[in-house]
Structure formats: structure tokens, C-alpha cells
Image (cartoon, rainbow, N blue to C red; front, top):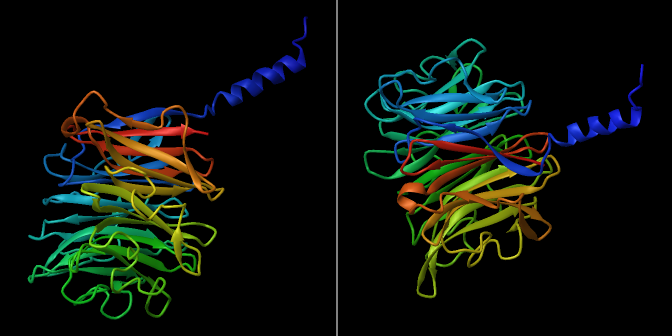
Length: 416
């Protein structure tokens, strides 16, 4: 019998293995029946085994409910077989996190009690379960007399859930509240963290919290507040016994966005904690450069000593994005500590999603497709919005976004 040359066999196997990683983008799904903002949003994350998960809002059961799907064997599979919220109210604004042992947790806003309140569930392997009594019924974990919206969920290394949100009282002013599960109840994290003015001070318009577990294993929290001249980004961190500023002035004056253009609006902050102790912050700066209205992506990093730009000019004028029509930043880190950023942009009356990776002090695109969109349609129909970004341990990049004027979420992955 003729023997097959060993070196040829090895070559074939190597080529086959290389073919699985193509340094290119590929579409891996289109989630239909998604509710588009302002009524809903979605959240993308990756589990410890590299599996991508998406939490989103759909009305396919008759009213707006929360669903969680994961990508398994080339298809998106619903976790738990049905919706997470399963309430008679409208469920929106999901925030998704996966514990280190692979358990999904979801927080969202639900108005089944008459006003929006914050609900939380986790998947126990069989069903979506509450965490304590009424964590996803009645008035949830917020139990506020006002409107509770924009939940932000984070898990520490032990799997303890922390949830921050915006609470708007009868006065019309809004504050940032936070609670955590202490093993028996949803408790405040420090006295007054979920009552009165919460972490924000006085009569404010605090909104859009972003929450991560910081380098010390404790929560870091940022938000935007428009109570003063323009809207600014503010932040605090929990040190185990109290809430502290993240660098001088992070919760006073013009906060973390003080270096931005005077009088500009700084909104929708996104916080990201890296494994090397560095924390990253991005937001949307809205101002006027010359006589033109500008929307740009600004970004800073905190290295333990203070905040500085992530690259030259990343928090001035046209910012990281270098454009005047950019919004909705998202960030992620790979296992090598390289920073990735994505955002929505408008160019020649067409909407796109841009994604880039930082290399030193510069940024570069990934693959042959530096941005995604519907260039032959006007923004009202084909405008991508709210991009989400996540990276698996093997370096696979997942990028997802909502398409305005449709009911779909587009998902792409980049195989390095």
C-alpha cells in the first residue's frame, strides 16, 4: 500500500487550522424582533468559556420582555427557553453580566408595579430565578417611589451582584443609586447609597450610570449630570468602607470631563477595568468647534496616579474618533491588554459603526472592513446605533449594534 507522505499530512493539518483564524470579519447572526430605543436596548458580553451572550428586548410575546441568547454551534440559542422578565409590564434596558463560573445575571427596568423599577434575575441552570424575595416582582430591588431606570450591573470575583441605576423622584430631579446582594438582602453600599440623593449630590439630573469592578475588587461608578453649565461626567469608587473620588474633583465641579470644552455636554460615559489595574473611561462630547456643532468620542485612562488621555488628543477637540459626528462609545480589552473602541458615526448622510484598536499612541482598523453600516440608505432608515463590544479569551472580537428603522440587531465577529 502506498504511504501518504508525513510532511504533506502535517502541511494539510496546519493549513486547516490556519483557515479557522482568518483575520477578517464575518456576520454571525441577525436577531430580529428587537425593540429599538427609546423603548429598549441590548447588552453584549462574553462568558469565561468564550461564548458570547446578548440580552435584548423583544415584543414577540405580546409586550416588551427581556430575552438572553448565547451563540452555540453557529446559532443563537435562547437561555432558559423563554423570556427572562415574564411580567405583565414593559421590560426594557437590560444589563447583562456572566460570573466567573459561567452563570448569567440580568438587571432591567420594569413598570408592572405602575412606575419603572429595577428587577434582577440569574439563570440557575434550569430557570431564571430571583435573587432574594421580589427581586423581579412587585417593586424589585429599587422599591422607589419614583422612576428607576438605566440599570448597570457588575459582578465581583465571588459572583456578588452590584446594581446601580438612575432614580427620578417626585421633584423631577434624578440621582444615582446603588445596591448589592449581601447574601440575605439587597442592601445599600454605604449609608444613603439608595435613598435621598444617593451618590449624586443635591438637585441634579444624574443619568446613565456605568459600573465596573475596579482593580481593588470594589465597585467603580461613573454617570453624567446636567445640573450645571453643560452636562459633565462624574465618578466615585467604593473603598470597602465609603465612597471616594477617583482622583481629585471627580465628583465636583465639572468632574472627570473638566478638560473638555467649556460649556459642552459630556454624556453616556462607559467605564472599563483592565487586568493590569488600569481603568478606562469614554464618553460622548457634544459641543461647538468654531461655528459647527460637534459630536466626538473622548477617552481617558486612570493608572493609579491620575487620569490622562489614552492617546494624544483623545480628550480634546475631535477626541479619539477625530470626527464631528460620532456617538455611543463602547470599549473592550483583549488578554494582551490592548484597548479596542467602537462607536456610531455619520458620514456623507450615512450611518456606520467604527471599530479600532490602540497600538501605542495610534489607532488602527481591524481587517479589511473598518466600519459597518448601510451606506445606500439615509440615517433614519439604516443608522446603526448603540454598538456593543466584547472580546473572548482567544482574541475573537464580537461587535453588535441596533439598526434604526428596523427591528434587528446585527452581530459580527473578528477572527484574529
